[in-house]
Image (cartoon, rainbow, N blue to C red; front, side, top):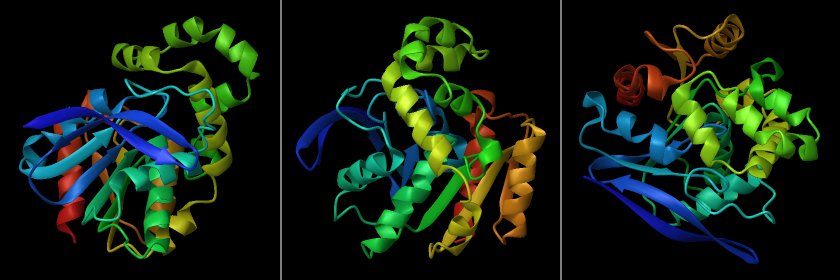
Length: 261
């Protein structure tokens, strides 16, 4: 059974409230991190409760600025700050965790893994689903980041309405536009040159998850990840929106990669 709760997390000088969902089961605890404009409470339960992942402990959050979590205007929304906040949320006694991140959440998961490695408690796995690893991976985030923030906020309703996916449109509607813009700007800046860092990170199990229907640029990123020596698994009948397109197939891909450990 899943439990959702509002919990406080702290950074120096600040306290914020985030929505956290969790379910009990076998470890490692799979920690799910969502993409730009998404919400963990919307995206991850269908995956965490898929047949292939049944019985595994899980945890997901709505990142600050997204979903049902706080939307502080004094927060930078830099991915490095989100990573430190998440490490604080996991706590020093979190036990074994496997990080699974989608899109921006995959880039963020890499930063969280690096923080945990530096703290001497590396995750047991780091699985990323089409994150920004190269400049070419930036699509909607690059458009948002290139728009002056005041213009972006003024045109936020039009931006939300322009989303093709009805499910994504609804989660974007929950996001704070300033949080979205700052996150996109950080993602474009951070999400490049990361394939060597991903390959070199001393985590026992690593892998990349690709959507069969995703564009040629994303397939090229997957090819470069494979060339760096990391396993790549393709989810059939799915594009970038794994949780919407094929959550069961996404769950199978996660389970298969975790089994390799």
